[in-house]
Image 1: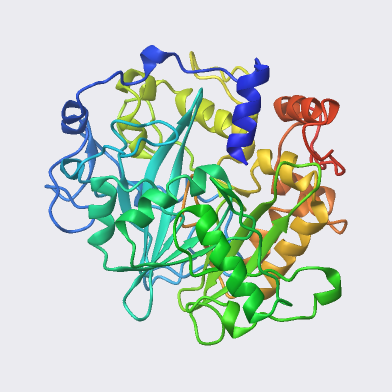
Image 2: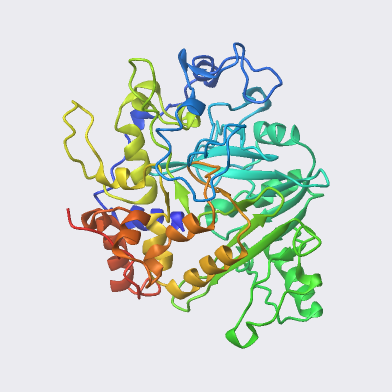
Length: 497
C-alpha cells in the first residue's frame, strides 16, 4: 500500500512532499566509521554494551525513563509495571536503544534488495518482552525513509514464529538464529514492501513451514485465496499452484470467510496452520479486499497470540514515537529509532526538523509548518497529530478505508471481538504498543457511525488542510480511472484550523 503511493508520487510529482538531498545521506561512507562513532562493543547479553548502555557520540539513550514523554494514551486495561501497581504508558515497553547489531556478519543483500539500502542494509534487534523480538531494517524510496520490522515470537514448543521476514543479510540471519530455530513463517500482508524478501528468506530457511495471506501475487501470476467453504481437495490444489506462482513452497494460505452466503462457515482443520485453531497458539482474522477496478486484491492478517496477550499486525495501526524530549544534554533531540544513523549523517539527524519531516513523508502528510518561537524548530501540525498516539495511518485511511470501508470495519470488529490482547506489535514505527481492543477500535473511529466528534478527533486530531497530499493522490486516481473510486469520506472528523 505504501509503495503504491510512492510510485504515484514519483510519476505525478506531488510538490508538497520534499526530499532530503543526496548530500544528506551517507554516500558510500565507511560503515565501520559510522558504527564506531555510535555503537559500543557488545557483550553477548541483549542490548548491553560495555558500560551497560548504548550510546551515540556519548549521549545516553534512557528511553525507559522517558515514559511520561511517551504516554499520550493509556489503555483502560494497561499492564501493571514491575510490582509498583502503576499502569504502563503507551510506549513504556518500547526500548529500541537496547539494541543488538552484528555488522561483522555482513550487510550485503544478494540478490540485490528491491529497495535501498542495498549495499549496507543494517539490521537492529531489540527485545519486546514476553518472548518476542523485533528485527528492524530501513525502507527507503525516493524521499521516504521508514523502519520496517520483522516480529519474532518464540512458540511454546521452542521454535520461532517469524512474521513478515526481511532481507536475510548475514547480520539479519545471525541475529535471528541467536534466538532459536525458525520453524514457522507467516506472511501477513500482500503489500510489496512486506513480501519482497520472501524468496530470499526461504532460500536461507527452507525447512520452515510457510503460511501466507490471501491474494498474494508472484512472478507467474496471482495465487488466489482459501475460503471456509472450500473442500480439502480444493484447498490443496490452490496451495500447490500458489507455491509454483510464488517461487517458494508454502504450507497454506490463511483462510477467510468468503461470500456472505457462507459467512456462517468455519475454517476446517485441513485449512489451518499448526499454530492456529484450538490446538494452536494463535487466533487470526483476515482482511481481504478485491475490487474489480483495482490491479489486484489487498490483504492483511491480524494474529492474536493468546499466551502473551499480543496482537500482531502489519499496517493496521501505527504509533509514532516522539523525539526524546527529556534528553538531559544540551544537544538537539534526535529520533528514537537509532537505526537511522546507519543511513543519514549526524548533521542531518541533529536537525530538529528531521524526525517530524521523516514521519510526515512516510505517511504522506504535507510538510506544513507553523512558527514555534524557537529558531529553526518549527511546529508541524500533521506530525503533532500523530506523535505518541495509536492511529490508523493516514495513507491507509485515504486508500483502503476510503474504498472498502465495510470490509475494513468488519475486520476491525472481528479483531475486537476476538480480544485477548493488551498490546500490539506492528511492522512500522514503535512496538510494542500497550493498548487493548478498545484503543485499537478507537483508531478506526472514522468508520463507525456511533463515533462522536470527540472520538473522531481523538482517533486522529488532524486538520483538514493536512489531507492535501492524499486528496491530490485520490483525485488523480479517481479522475484517471487508475483504480476503484473513493466511496467514503476518510477525512471525517478533521477540523479547519
